[in-house]
Length: 276
Image (cartoon, rainbow, N blue to C red):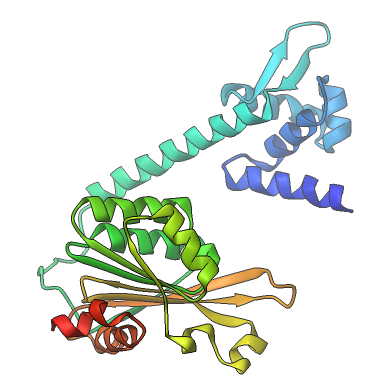
C-alpha cells in the first residue's frame, strides 16, 4: 500500500514540476528499472506502447533519459540526484522568466504612489508565509522583533535573512516560547538578543489546543509592520495549514495593538514602546 502511494505521489510531483502524465509515468517506471525497452516501460507504467516513444523523446530532450540505439532500443533514467538538479534548474529558470515577464507588464491602473496604511491582508500556506516573513525582514531599516511560537518557523533560510538584517545594521530581537527554541536560536544567531517570551497567551488556551490551533510567529519590523500567523495541527500532530495576517503603517490599528502586546513580553530594556 505504501509502495503504491509513493509511486502515485512521485507521478503527481513530476506533473507539478511540468511533466505530462505519460512522461511522468515513464520516468517513474524507468527509475525503478536498470534499463528497459519501450515494451517493458509500457508494461511497468501502464502507458500505451505507442505513446511511450513520444514520452521518452520529451524526457530525452529534458535530459532525464538516456537512449541506447540497439535493436530494440534500450532506455534508462539518469540518476535520481541528477534528475532532481535538472528539474530544479528548469523550474528556477521558468520562475525567473515569469518574474521578468510580470515585471515588464504595464499596470492596468495608474499607481498614485500613495501608500495605504490602514489595511490588513491575509495570506495562507507555510511556504508563502515564510517567504513573506523573510521579505519583511529584508525590508527592515532599524529593528526586527520576532516571537517564535512553533519550531517549524526556524528554517536555515530564516536564519540567513536575520543574519543579513544584522549585517545591514538592524537590531534583531527574538523571543521564544520555550527554552529549547531559545537555545536553538542562540546557537544559530549568537549575535542576536534572544529571550524566553512572557507572552503566555501565544501558546494558546485549552480550547485552542483542543482545536489544534496555535500562534506560530509574531513579527514586528521597524515598529510599523506586523505579521502574525497561526497553525492548525491534525489529531496526529502533523502540521496541516498556516494562515497569517499582516499590516503596515504607524496608524494601522493592528500594528499599534501588536506593538503594545509584544512590549509586554519583552525584557524591559527592549520595550519598543519605550522608544516612542
